[in-house]
Amino acid sequence: MKKAWFCFWSVFLVILSGFFFLIWDYWQQRPKQEGEMAKAAFTAYTTKWKQQQFSDMYEQLSLDAKARVSKEEFVSRYENIYRGIEATHISVEPLYTEDVVPDEDGKICFHYRLSMQTFVEPISFTGKAILLKEMQNDKLDWYINWNPSFLLPELEHGDKLRANTFRPQRGEVLDRAGRRVVVTSRQSANTQGL
Image (cartoon, rainbow, N blue to C red; front, side, top):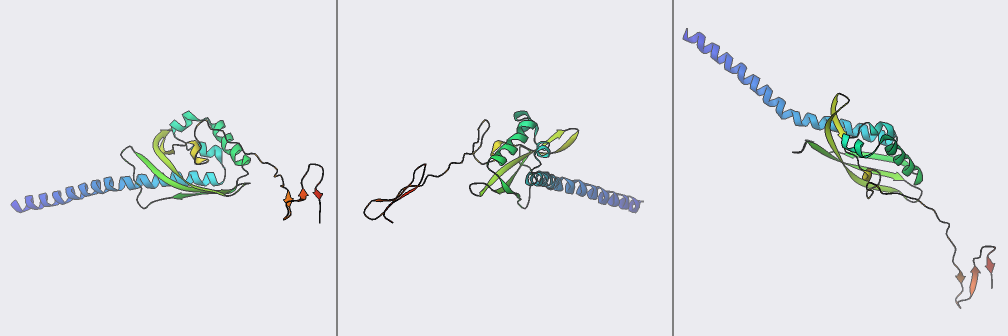
C-alpha cells in the first residue's frame, strides 16, 4: 500500500511540475510574442508608407494620435508635403534590435530610416516610433503614436512647411583690370572687349 501511495504522489508531482514549467515558459515567452506582434504592426505601417497609402496608415495610429489629427488632415499633410518637395523614391526601413520587449509603461520603441529624393537634394534621417498596445474596433493590437516628426525630423504640431524655388541671377563677369566683360540685364546680356 505504501508503494502505491509513493507511486501516486511521484506521478502527481511530476505532472504538477510539468504544469508549472509550461506556465513559467508561457510567461517567459509572452514579452517576446508581444515584441513580434509589434514588429509585424510596424512592418505593415512602413510598407504602407513606402507605397504612400496614407489613408491605410491612419488606421494604424494610436487613439491619442487620432485625437490630435483627423484622417483628412493626416492624409492631406503627407500628400501636400510630399508633392511640395517633389518626393520620389521614398524608402522606409524599420531598424529592429534582437529582442523587442515592452518597457515598464507597456510601450515599444522602434527606430526607422527614411530616405527620399526631393527637387533640391536627397533627404535621409533616422526617426523613432513609439507603439502602444490598445483596443480599437474590438481588436487588441499595437498602434503607432504618430507625430509630425515622422514627415521630417524637426516638424512639430502646428508647423507649416513651404517650398519655394527662385530663378538664379547671374552675376557680372570682370576681366583682370576690373572692367565688365559680361553684364546681365533683364533685356539682354551685354558683352564688351571680347
